[in-house]
Every structure is written in C-alpha cells, then in structure tokens.
Length: 95
Length: 483
Image 1 (cartoon, rainbow over the protein chains, first blue to last red):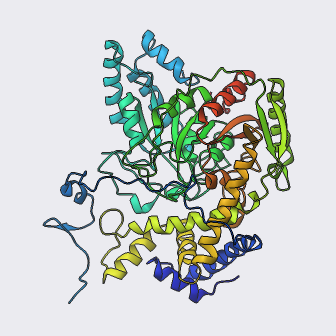
Image 2: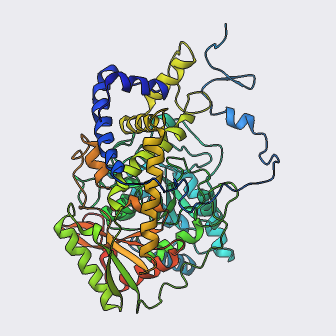
Image 3: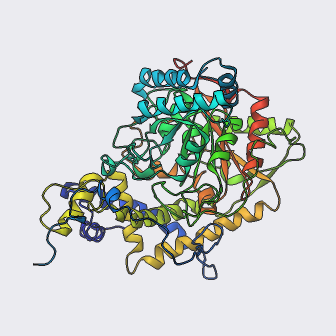
C-alpha cells in the first residue's frame, strides 16, 4: 500500500499539522512502509472477534454529576501564550 | 553510598551516618559531574535541598516513612507543580504544570526528595531516546550507544547512579527496554495499577507508569508508593494494593515458567538468546519447572500496536493547539494557521509521523480496516496470554532482540526501530505486568531478562526477580567510570 504526497498533505491538514514541503515525500515513503506492515493483519480472520478497547474489558467508571474541580482560571491562564481580561486570545475568527 | 539500596540508605539516614541534605548534595554533584550523559532535562537543585531539609527534621523527630529523605528522579512526563514539565518536546519547553501528577504527589507525601526531571523520547515516542528535543541520552555502559527509550534518561541515570531510583512509563516497552539496555531493574505494572493523573498521555489504552531501580527490592518499595486507586484517573483500578515487599523471599520451588517459542525465533541475537537460557537455567536450579508455550498471534503485535498507539496519540496530542498552553507560533494570520504552524514548528519528526499515521488510521473509509481490525487482533493476542497463563505462572524471554545499538544507527529507518519492540508490546496490548531484570552481558553490554506475569501479580514478579538477584549479582554491576 502506498500513499501519495497529495494524500499525506491531506492527512496533515486534517491533523492541523504543518509539515515542510521538502519533507512530504519522506513522510509518504515512511507511512507507506508502515502501512505495508499493517497488511499482515488482514491475513487473520477476525469476523467473529469483538474489538478490544480496554485491556481488561472494563467500562468507564461513572461518578455523580457534580462539580468537583475548583475554579482556577487565573492559575491556568498564567501559562497561556496570550490572554486578556480572563479570555484566551486567538486570531480573529469572525469578521 | 551510590551503590546502596534504598533500604540501606534509609538505615544510614536513621543512624545519622549522613543527613538527607548531605545525601541529596552528593547526588546533585554527581549529576553535574556526569552531565554529558544528558540524563536530566531539569535539575531541581533548590527544591530538592529544601525537601531534604524538611526530611531531616522528620527523620530526627521520628515521623519519617521509609522513603523520607531518599532522592529519586521523575521522568519528565509527570507534571510537577512549579517545576518545568516538557515531555521531551519543544511544544512544552515553556510549560510549568499548575498541579502535580498523582505519582509525584505520592512520592512527595512519602517525603522522597525529587532531584529533577529525566530526559525521554519526545512524548514517549521512541525506543532510543533520540527523539528528545533536548538531545539523545547516552548509555553509561558504552557512551556511543543508546540507553533505549522512551524512559532512557531514567534508565541511564539509575545505571550511572545519578539517582538511587527513578520513575518511568511504558506504552510499548518504554520501561523494560531501556532497563534492559542499561542493566537495571524495571517494572511495568498491570494497566490501571498506577494512577495516570498528571502523566502526559500518549496512547491511553496502553500507558502505564512504573518503577526503575537497581534491584527488585527497591522496585517493590517504589511500586508500593506509586500504586493505588485514584478517582482522578478514570482508568485507575479500584483494588487493594498488596505489600510488595512481603513475599520477596518466598521460595520458587514448583514455579511454572513458560518460554514462548515466538520469543526465541529468528531476529534474536544468538548471544542474547544464550544469556536468557542461562538465566532460565538458574531458575531451574531454584526448583522451577520449564515448559515451552506458544503465543501464536504475537507476531501481529507490531502492526496492531503501530495502528492503535498512533491512533490514540493523534487524538491525545490534538490538545496541543497553541491556545491554552505550550508553544505558539509567531504572528499567526488566522486560527488554522495558528494550529498548523504551532504544531508543525513544535513537534519533532517521530511525533509527526505518528500523528499522521494515527489520523490516517482513524479517517473515514479507513477506520474499520485499520483501527477496528487492530482492536480485534488485539483481543486475539490477549487471549493467547490468557490461555498460557492457565498452564504456567509466568513467562520468560528476552526484552530486546539485541543489546544497546549505536547512537544514530537506526534513526534513518523508523520501521527498523519499531521492529525492535517485538518482545515488549504484546504485554501492553494485553495490559499485563512485566519486568526487566539484569541477566548478564554480551560484549560488556547488559542483557535484560523479561518476566511476564498474570494481571495484578506484581508481587509475584518481584519475588521471582528478587530470588534471581539473591543468586546472581548482575544487577550490582556498575559501568566503568561510574563506580
């Protein structure tokens, strides 16, 4: 299985991941060989096997729907790249 | 004092042979002296001395626990309030967590002294510690070779005796493989045994933290402190924690050891194979019975792992958006540009490769063929283990197909690096506990024996490792120049 450079660019965009134009071909090559490795799986019959999402098949533990975290906005915003008046700043989204 | 066990150090502290401040200072000096190994990303000198001072007061007033005043070091994947946590990435080079990981909190409560934060592969993705933004770590046994990864800083620091013990994390072998390559004792607990709160996520159905130390006896003490139910981690298992030191001296008479034939097939270095056989013979002398078993689906663990781990990583790492914390690119023109450039500029090559792979495997049209298929085969791999554990108590085999390889030797070929994880990743897919125990040397490089146990049998693994360490002294060897 091989991925084209166009496909790699599309995946990178889906992941919002900048990759340099000069590296695209190398990623395409690496990902293609990783995908080749994956084809080994298709030789195994798994029609009657249930997918395993948790090593011990446990379900997510539930808890009461109540607020347990104190409000620590200032503490959390202290490590943000850009904040103003308690808000996280990003480039303008709506004109 | 550098080659003493934690129990011995604790005894000396109580006898007044030296104070915790003196002990801490001695290790801090040693860390400086061997800076070229590049084990530490951050040395927390000031905080360490402050904690040591408090520990000395507690020791003299008799309020101390066994770990009070004992220096340890944390893999830089565990969040530490007030001390930088980077996860080996440029993305978090400016990140100081607003809270402590539960593991860190547990060690703090026990009065342990944190010397600093240990180097690692970026976001724990790697098997050689060469993907770290802070540069590769060197293996003290041969500074031209890798220490293994991703907990390479932890393994190298313990082997070089820059800290009596350290923490690590293991998603596909990241505790066991560096422990093997550096000749130390490492334990990956059962999935859910140790809280992952504040442990930066890589692949959430696989990640687990564990101890890295110079002996099974020390590892038992660390695991005791690390383990336990934590409501802050939804995957934490609500199950009582046994006394891990209590059974260390139990006899191994009648122990049933399974040798999976898949662990000894092609690809395994001959001398490593011989070393493992010798170790198994040692167990026979102690009264263990040996049986050949089979894990027929084990060979599929590499493709399964390299679908599941990247898929989960691509989801976990989507949180690094340049908005709330971490790296942000300069002068983004719009929000998309902010995301794309922040992530593009701050993630390294291997992390990008895995995000791409994971995004692809989870994308529409491929999800069933890759992710669901991998989860199905994962169940088959796990069932193989369940079957053999009805016949034997533990499994033994190598950790790594070879000893430490050269720095730069495998960096050009990611696949070759992935293939070297063959003996460790099936354990993560099944969620089982496993150890790496020093079992000898090939060309002066350490070889690790892997011992795999059934779910929550950490106490038994530690007993089995400890008995071997009573009969052999491989774990007490120190690399030249680090005596």
